[in-house]
Every structure is written in structure tokens, then in C-alpha cells.
Amino acid sequence: MRVLYHSWLEAGSLLTRIVLAEKMLETHLRLEKPWERRAEFLRLNPAGTVPVLVEDKTVFCDAMAICEYLDESNPSPPLIGEDPKARAEVRRLTSWFMGKYQVEVTAHLITEKLMKRFLRMGEPDSGAIRSAHHNLKIHMDYLDFLTERRNYLAGPQFSLADAACAAQISIADYFADVPWDRHQSAREWYMRVKSRRSVRLLLKDRIPGLIPPKHYERPDF
View 1 (cartoon, rainbow, N blue to C red):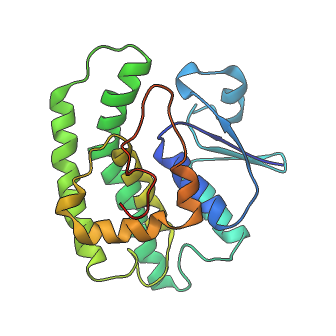
View 2 (view 1 turned 30 degrees about the vertical axis):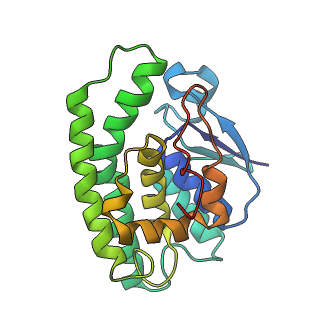
């Protein structure tokens, strides 16, 4: 029995779910609200963060640690590269999107557009949202740069880097914040990625009371 504790629009959770689906690993998804600080969940991960994977009574925490474990223990298809140079580039880009992008874009959008609403923390900070939009444009320009030169972000094959970027971009897209009309190359890449079963499964998620734009789930948007 494999169980993944995950949360709404949480990039690490989304990334892990993409990897599990790419590996065709049957997994029971259990929605966790980390802000509730449930004692049972804290016993699994004292840090109180998602994702958490429980497999054969072993507990794995942290999205990157989980994804590395899954790729090593289930090598087909390979998602972190087949040689040292390829792995270095996949890891660099994955770190970019799960680190730099997360801090500069996703963290602001989640706090202002989701958490403040559900936890009744007051009105969204328009300055923080403007900052996220400004940073998103820079990241989208970089995504254009990569996708104009490569079929997928780290090379010819879909990799963990694409999964990480798709996880992050899907969050901004849920809020209708991605200016797709200005980023055609990135848009064509995302259309290819959205056509994959592993990503389509994520795009079926809906948060009660918060509806994504009509194009959110469509690959041919």
C-alpha cells in the first residue's frame, strides 16, 4: 500500500504526483491540510510539510528526496537523466523551479490568493501579487529561452525538470495569471506537457469555491 499525503496547489505535492504517474505506480492520495497541524500527520513528518510518501511502512519526506527515491527504485522511465551531464542539467533546472521560482512567484500567489482566503487572514496584498506577476514574466522569458532551443527543458526527453516546471506553472495558471499570449514557445511546450497522462490527472483537481479558467485543463488552449 502506497500512500501520498498531499495538499492543494502545493508544488512539491504536484511534482511528486507527476513522478508517481509517470512511473505508473498505483498510489492512494490523501489530502492533508498542513496548517491544521494534525498530531497523526506530525508523527509522520515533524516538519509538518507535504508531500509525505508512505511505502511499505517506510516514510519519505521532502519532494526532491521522494522523487529521487522513486526514480532510483523505479528506473523506467528515467526522469533524472541517463548520464552525469544530463543529470546535472535536470537537477539544475529542477532546483531553479522548486527553489527560485517557488520563492519569487508561487509563494506569493498561494499566500495572497489561497491561504488568506481559506484562513481568513484579511485582504490580499496587491503589492505582493504585483511582485509575483513581475517575477513570473522573467521566469516565462527564461522558459521561452529554453523551449526555443530544446524539445523539453533539459533535453530531448521529458524529465524531472519538466515535471517541476509544470507543477509550478499549473498553480499560476489555476489563478489565470500566466500571460500565455506573450510566450508562444513556452505555451507550445506546456501544450505538449498537458497532453501527458501524468499532468492531465493533476489538472482535474478543483478547490471548493475557487474555479480555474476554462482553458486550465485543455491541452489545446
